[in-house]
Length: 223
View 1 (tube, helix red, strand yellow):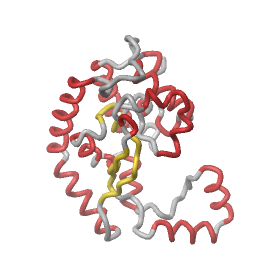
View 2 (tube, one colour):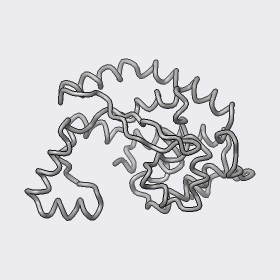
View 3 (cartoon, one colour):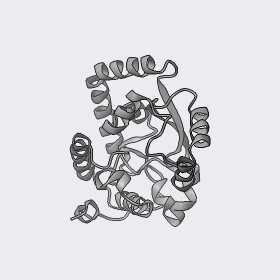
């Protein structure tokens, strides 16, 4: 049974909801748990920060603009996993490899991406690069569980489902992540995001968080 099928249905959330999905209860849960996790992971965060800087001196964090609740933009934080001059490194690699250029033009991804540092590759596989998003959660820009954070260019691809997406804070994890992550198609991701918002319950958030721990430990569907 898929994660979507296992979801327990509940009354649909109005697309014109004046407050984020889950309301105050979800927000309190987010702040308390994210704060505890931030304290728990503090030693690991310090070690990772030092490793990122030593492997390639420069900014420790990378912030990419994402669309959040009610269409608001925010900087989604991650540990930097690419070299500082990533744009130059990419262009040089594509110029030297026609096969890589063809791969990039088709998927905008590279199986062997020269921009990713050694520590960055490890962080991505283990999902540790996303730990700084606990700060996004505490600041109210994200939730521990919610739709996958998207960029402006993806809004049109959500079509009439975008109102479901903007009714909730995007999540550090979500139904999409425990359903295959990078192994799911884009259409499936949109469907999972919509299902999550329409059937939200606190107990489902707890289930998703528990399942996320298993997925990360098993490295299922990692990018």
